[in-house]
Image (cartoon, rainbow over all chains, first blue to last red; front, side, top):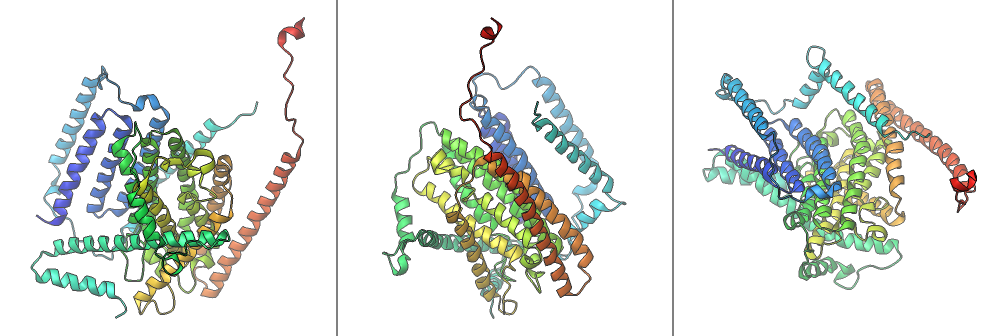
Amino acid sequence: MTGIQIIFIIVAVVTLGAGLMSVITRNLVHAALWLVLALLGVAIFFVLLNASFLAVAQVVIYIGAIAILMIFTIMLTRRVAVGSADSQLNANWGWAAFIAVALFAGLVWLLSGWNGFNITAQQMSPRTDTIRQLGTALVSPSAYVIPFEVASILLLAALVGAIVVAWDRKS
Amino acid sequence: MGDPVTAISQWLESLFLGWGLAPGWVAIIQAFIGVVAIATFVLLVDILLVWVERKVVARFQDRLGPNRLGPFGLIQPLADVIKLLIKEDITPIGADRIVYNLAPIMALATVLLLWAVVPLAPTIVGTDLNVGVLYIVAIGALGTLGIIMAGWASNNKYALLGAFRTVAQMVSYEVPMVIAIMVPVILAGSMGINTIVFSQSPVWYVVTAPMAALIVLISAIAELGRAPFDLAEAESEIVAGFHIEYTGMKFGLFYAGELLHALTMGGIIASLFLGGWRGPGAETYPILGVFYFFLKSFFLYWVIMWVKYSLPRIRIDHMLNFNWKFLTPLSLVVLLVTAVLHKLLVGLPDWQYVIGMLLANVILFWGTLYVLRRYARTERVQVAEPMPVAVPPAAPMSSSQS
């Protein structure tokens, strides 16, 4: 077993454990912190796959923006943060479990036909600039320029919407 | 010659390989030793920073500062450390014990993580990440998390208020900072910090992009939570903010983290705009680069302290207005102008390129000052209008009807 494999196993166990804890813990702030740990674990997976840009973007977006916003929201609503004694399940738990199992089964079914598990990754030369390739792919017409522009327009619309909502209308 | 760090690293590599270890394991052990070495080195510098900070603030306030222990009071920080270590460690009632104890560790660890990508010399760099600039932004987000944890877990309303202020401040000042950091990225054509340092020839980016450097410096001070942006720990309003309940070495970790963060930010700005390890002879003797790097870092650290001990704290609404209504639009304009101009001028000879970029920045700076002056004039007119201190209450509805 190589060192990378041992690191992978440790990170995988920590990520899964953190994900589980974020679901079963009763304190909401603790749940959010466990979620941060799980997201950090996913970032480390990206690092192990040599996808440094995705790893850093994962930390910036999911921990830097989303998780902090969640913790902030929970802290503003102080009452909910303290774990309550009643059940953590509501009436729809059966549906949730069904969808989760169906999604997992679907992913397993999809990936079982994929031959990527058995081939080893091509060794990239250390001179390859993956960031530059990603950047040109995002704006080249033959690759991802349309999704990229659609996402920009969506974000712009969200920005304008936020400004409209927060606008102080002077009567 | 001139690069002992790489030499030691290569010697260790051959030693471990000679012992019959697999190359994969050797790389991991080497990385581990590197992490321990740089973290220890940086923390030792941190002890010195306590002395520098106290000495400089004393000089700004026309005092002498620590001068009893050792030459120039150099042993004073060691005494400070011992004092912090033997202080009583208090955990407030109702505090969230694990999160409470984890927060100071997070606060210091995130600062140490930044040193992984800062190039000390052309060959002495933790890891030359090709997304180094983005990595710095990501670690900044983790630092915010540490402060939120401290504020929430202390079970103290002042601490929670401090955490709220910190989030409002850090999340907003990240925006102009990221946009302004994009300027050196555009000029260098890379997000790797060492590549950015390498491409700062013949002139540093502070000459070709002074506006961006200024914006990054201002938002870095805000991100550090230092005066005039120290609302998160405003002594006169919320006592000490997020670290109000911390005592002893836990407070010490926050304090050390704050000082080290300031130096680290100085080092990052030095790498992005002041040429990092660049200096005469640094390319041939990399160890000289370490000297130049710390020279520039400490200069910027001193600038940050100069600002801290000269300016009063600004009000929170002014702080947010300054960010969203001034710094963010300005940084967007700077980014646009720099990107277009760089594309237009990049083919010209060096001196024409530098003069063109500098001229554009000077014009931008003058335009900004003009707009600010006009804004201040209207503001002054508004403030100068006489305002009634107490308005008589409107007559009740019933009496007007009768």
